Structures are given as structure tokens and as C-alpha cells.
Image (tube, rainbow, N blue to C red; front, side):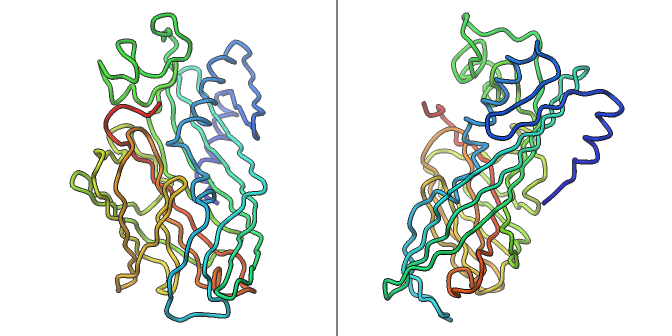
Length: 311
């Protein structure tokens, strides 16, 4: 997996004596007990906010499979994944002089890929995916809960930042403001598929993503849609016989080959708030060959839908 920050973290620790909080599941450690409340708020932000969701592609339920050209040993009728174990480790490097926290989130997901063919024969393949994403937060040490509340999200002048600098407050939890965010990259242990770029288009957005782990400025570089917009997603890079899906949490639809090595699909934005969409590219043998292991690549794309955030 991408380790672009690992060297910087070690150097920062030796040179500046920064705090490092590393956690697996709910376990976090800190060198400054006085900062426990602030760190807990940051951990909750990373766990609870849907823009950090990294399980959507693995919890989408059963998928019916239409007729395919170039069928293989298996003629899949439907398939689904069952997550049996998950592990998340957060590395937080905090500089008390600047108030900046650099976050790396590592994700491991284990489970089973179930495939049922047209003769009702079920095939089960184990899978393991490693995932990673990055984020940057800034701590406001002078922040106080509005109206006496605790760790409220939004601005002092209104819930969810409806007044004041609404867009920036939309990305704040308590004293922490999210200032940079990457997408999500998930890879299977066996990996033969690749993605060169993903283009996302709507009446208000036209963005091409070439690196899912590139940090984006928040909120200016995060894709923002209006509810009801139809979004077109075009993917280039996977083999022509690859199987691609566009995911939203608990929902997915196929991306259709359009020739020239590209695939295309659409979805209609419906729900306000902060979200993640994913493109999953699967090698042909993953679903059509009983001996081929799970061979999949996932790119996650954070986005925002205008309007009131969901409750």
C-alpha cells in the first residue's frame, strides 16, 4: 500500500517530539493526558462521519448479474460479500506548535465472496483487502461548545453551520476542523486490475481523479452536488473484460464498457450531507473462474450534497 508519509512521520517524531496516537479498533494511546477529550472528539469524527466510510463496497448486499459476453467456467447469477473481520488503525501525528494533526487510516477487511451460478451452485472465495486514506485536521484551542453543548458540530451561530462560514463549519467537529482529505484506496491480496483515471461529471461538477490518495483542500476541492443531480462516472484503465461497479452505501450498479478501454455509469444524488462513492474494478476471473482468487481494486471518492445534513 501507499506509504508516502511514513518517512515524514519518523523524522517528525525524532526532530519535534510530536505526539503520536495509534489505534486498532477503539484502542488509542496518547502522551498528553490533558488532550484526551480533544483526541476522543477527533476519533469520533473519523469513526462516525460518512465521508470517512470505507466499508460501503463490502456491505452492498446481493448483486444480480446479467448476461455477459465471454462467459467462463462460472456463469454467475448473483454474488455478494460477507465481512467476517475488520480492523482499522489510525495514526495521528499532532504538532502542538501548529495545532495540525496529520492522520493516516489503515483498514484491513477479511471475508468471503459468495457467487451463485445459473445452476444454483454456490462458490465461496476468501478475500482480504488492505485500505488506506489520509486526512489533515487543525485544532482550535480557543473553541468553546456553542450554547453550553458538548462537541457540537457546526458553527457557533447555528446548527450544522447554517449561518456564518457554513461550508467550512460543515467539516468541523468540536475544536477540530478537517482541512484536507484524500479518497480511499483498497486492494486485494491478488491484484491484476488497475485504474488510470475516473472522471465525474454533473451539471455542476467536472472532475478527473488520477490518484485516489491525493490530498484535497476542504471544502474547496471536495466534489459538491445538489440533490437531484444525475452524475456520470467514467473509468479508464481496467482490462476490457473486467467487471466494474459504482457503489453508494448499500447500493451498487454496474459500469458498462463503452469501448476504448472505458466504462461508464450514472447515479442520481438524493441525500444531503457528506458521503463517499466508490468504484470497484474486479478481474474477470474473480467471478467467472472458480480457481481465480478475489482480484479487486477499490477507489473511494468523498463528496458533499448541498442542503441540510441528514440527522
